[in-house]
Image (cartoon, rainbow, N blue to C red; front, side, top):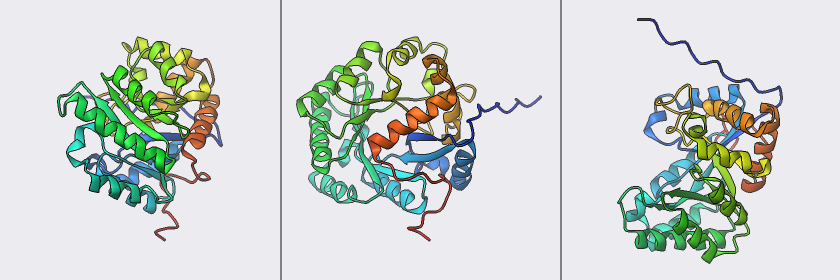
Length: 284
């Protein structure tokens, strides 16, 4: 049997960089080759990566990775699938951890009604408590919303105003939902799903969303874009997502890179760029 040809990566113009605003670098999918994954990302132009906490343990791992690698930043939070870990003690622990200089947001938090891990009212209460904590910390939010659009928007509106803003991670709605998210002052973050042929509502939402409100993410190791769909996702593959979003917006890949990088810097207050694979001065 002949091997499939390696995909031809889109190429960024010299000096352009992308930011992967949502990845899970601490997961087992990367445990054997994380250094290589980060080096490949930097080589492809993905200069900075935000690795996301989903419970207290993963939040600590995210911060440890941010300490080790100069181009990696962290978030802390408790995902709606992990609310068994959402106690007063764990929130106090995350509040302290969130003060680390490389923590740039609070999340991944939100609601998920696709799965039946916790009742909706339980999810809503924990979500609202974490939004309040993020406000106290003056950190932007990283929101998980799966099949819970109305509930998530309601919590965010009731918790407002939210001056630090936030990212609607892995945006999965239509143009009307995008408009509602933008009205909150949030950014819309796009994954490799946009490269799937049947993602027509998402593609139309992107066409109608201003370029200055778009972010890019892998959600690695999940949701790899075409032509790597179904395989492990990683930050270097952000190039394929970026190329499709640029096509939908009618701009060059370089123009998209400049805009989305500026958006990420503004929302997350990112420090001056360094390569994702570089070892941090904190460790050295």
